[in-house]
Image 1 (spheres, one colour):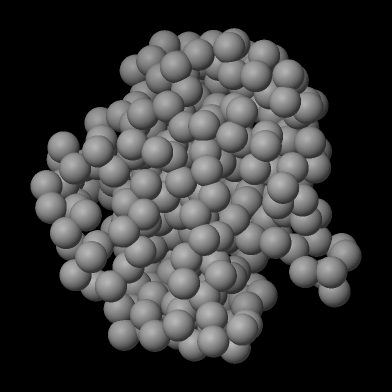
Image 2 (image 1 turned 60 degrees about the vertical axis):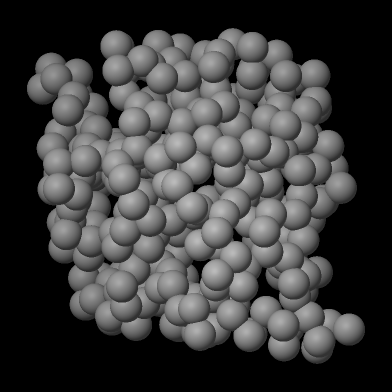
Length: 294
């Protein structure tokens, strides 16, 4: 896939992780994903922000915990916008909260942090010099972002008002966030995208998908609404094994799911993430899931 040089409004474009011990996190993630890491913060700032790269292209970042934020490790999702300030107004109008007012990040861009009406936290990015992740959908890079919620109807109203998203329901009942027109943008750099999606038997609407949507089950009352991040992997089993060797913890062992094989991992500080290996042969699992649900 060609390297990215920007996104369109409404598309998740960047991820970073807040870490109480960013140097230790550099060792973990650098060894796990083979990232090249560089602290781009001035030494006198007292903070650290390690840019993670693959072949010189930005893929993610590891940050010290921002001042005033809870001293816990977490992964953060950023959505591309034209104006962080205008988006802040949309968030409040739609019933969300502004956790961090829009602010400039030097020449890199402008950002803000919000919570949706149910409390799931996300950020937005108004690009300056930094255009988001340059490499995606390759092993060790961002593959997907997903919202976990108990209030799908409310989430549809909120994210539809803020980003223009619709809900796409795939075979088997899996729900996705779709941005109408996104496929047209992708086709410019990936001619034949829709045709290739059709060839593997995926839903034609999948080309407009920007994120996943998961309903938190009633039997998991301790899980709060949240956004997650998923990294692409060549071998999900190998990633799980290596993460354990490095001090991480496998929360969900590798398992086959529609179109892929995935695992859920917690890093040594407790920040969770998914690793997913594309397995086209697993496409029939979606049909089986739909039949079981019926």
